Every structure is written in C-alpha cells, then in structure tokens.
Length: 135
Image 1 (cartoon, one colour):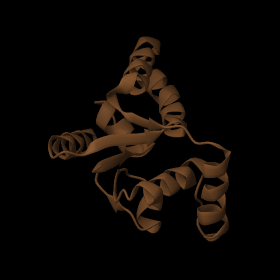
Image 2 (tube, rainbow, N blue to C red):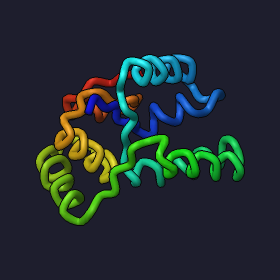
Image 3 (cartoon, rainbow, N blue to C red):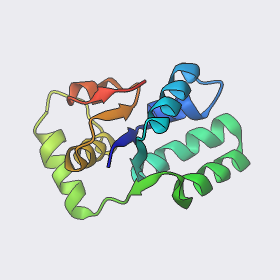
C-alpha cells in the first residue's frame, strides 16, 4: 500500500480553509491522493483533530468530520497496548532529546511498521524522526 500519513498539523490545514497553509496542504493532499496514496492515520490523531475542527468550524462540522474519518474515507489504525509500548520505547525513550508526544510516537511507529515515508504534516517532529513532510 502506498500511503500518506495524516498528522493533525497538515490534515487540519488541508481541512479548514481559514488555517495557515491551507492552500498548500490542500493541494498537496489532493495531488498525493490522485497519485495513488491512501490516506492513513491513527485514532489518536482523529481524536486530536476533532476538537480543533469543532472550535474552528462548529459542532456540526466536527460531527461531519468524524463521520467521514471513521466511516472509511481514511484508513484509521487503532493502537493497542503493544503498539503504544513500542512507540514509547522506540521513539520517546530512545530519542530523549526530542519533545515527541505520545500521539507523535504512535504515528511514527505506525509509519515505520507500514513503511510509510510521507506525512501530511507541518510538525517538525516528523522530519526529526526521519520522515518526508508532504506539506
């Protein structure tokens, strides 16, 4: 599977027209999907995105976002305890000089396991972890 990982920073910019970087993120997302990349993220990112969408676009928009994201438009990985432990050990504990969040670390571990190299992201942590930022 040729996948594009959706991080909150890039996905939010692509999703909300008033966000900084919207035009670039939206165009990049469309180009990569048209080029055969399957959008993929984690349930942690979906949970992180939802309140941002609600605050910026309203409750109804937040509901539509969840219906779309959880309804199959995006491939969503649901982390289990083993994945979370591996993310902590492989990214947070191993790179103690970086301020990776648990959400970031789980994202990186999913990308590593799935051999995903591109992330729609503005978060510099993805570059620090060695991934291509497609924003």
